[in-house]
Amino acid sequence: MEPTWRSYVVGGTVIADMVGVRGVSDACSRHDAFDGHEQGLRERVVDGVFGSVQVVSTALGVSGGISTIVVRVKFPLGAGTLTRKELADLQKIADDFDTEIHVVGSRASGKGRNIDSKFPVGKEPKSATRSDIDCRVDGSNQRVENVIDRINATETANAKPKHDFRTRETHAPAIK
Image (cartoon, one colour):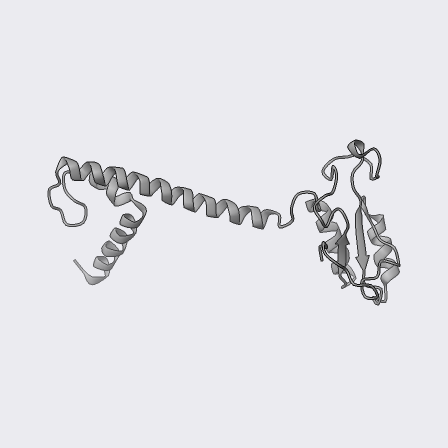
């Protein structure tokens, strides 16, 4: 066997052994996959059981890692904060005016009510209204009034000139 192929076989055998595939393979054969010796029934059963457990453990570990990654990539903010559309709208405004927008209040703390509903924005009744988005802006931006107007033109967000985070620091919880 050529040295290149030998390294592939050795590497593949190591990986197969680590994830349990070799154990399952050995359970289905009278000969060991690594050195070819004839296996007894006990050795085949043990290889099969441990190989199966290892395959399942590997699959669960991989799937758990993948689902965690997908959730983080899919939407980085928690429930009760901002919907994807709201986040995209505010990010577009921030990008268009080259500024920061800080979200504060109930939405920043994850306590926004009914944010995925079509309910009107309001405070009462809590069961039939949804939370607005309180925003703080950079008052030193030359186009701060335009930034505020654009924020207030969105469906749920609001901002006022007094919401300048340069003159009064934004405290947690906040989404910046």
